Length: 357
Image 1 (cartoon, one colour):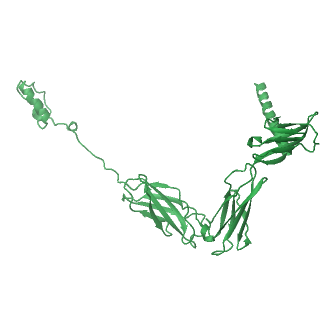
Image 2 (cartoon, helix red, strand yellow):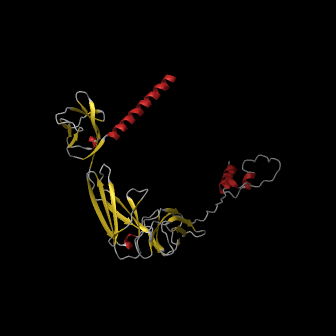
């Protein structure tokens, strides 16, 4: 058992050593970025043109389409499979002369940029993304100006493709201009947008939406909610709300627009039908509606069904008088049971038949 454990530990240790060595090798290698589809030339250090070298990629022979010219390796029409750590060894002693970490990718195209204020009047944020991947590290440069003056930009700590900007003043008639430039080792591309303050105001959806049935009313639902917690001053900059609801059995929504109230009673619900309910919010004067809140479900109040009682013939036990057993009836004479249960039509018929026999 001890030998098995020792062997396993040796294997794990060897694997760790190999990984560590590979990382050390990559750290010492220079990075070369190249565009997908191009022919790529890699030079083995500063060796002379008549030097003879052998190339390896990730420790194995190079199998891609290539051409070797002295200390140079030329890869033809590289693609993503061409990525790797290339090492060159001088012949005949086999001494390693250089290492190149080849990274294949694309230059960026124009980033898509959007800006929004969900914390009005404090400020706004802008976010951006590339519609097509570059496959290599790409950075972004952001420039925000208002009335031809640059504004301070704070990069978001969580979302790497987002920045925050404070409003320098409120109710300004001057537009804002945001320019985002994508940059990597193969190129750069920019996109700029302009907007007015009022056009980007969009609150977050209402929060903590609750829908409950109203007791003793089969057509009402009581809906309550909170204004979005990101909206900093609901007293000075009040919100209005848009409520929509429908029964699950139908696709058509019913809508109600409300002022700054945070509750509403639905009065036309179908009795006993489950409803789906959502809300949106908007500044009272400027901007656009928020996205819809998380859907909640509720069913109007229903009266508890009353218990139903019923009786059957088997539940009725005829009353009898205690006494000694009676004598067997004579032929042609009705039995005592027949005399007692004459109220039953079926038993009466049976008694008549007995009397005939």
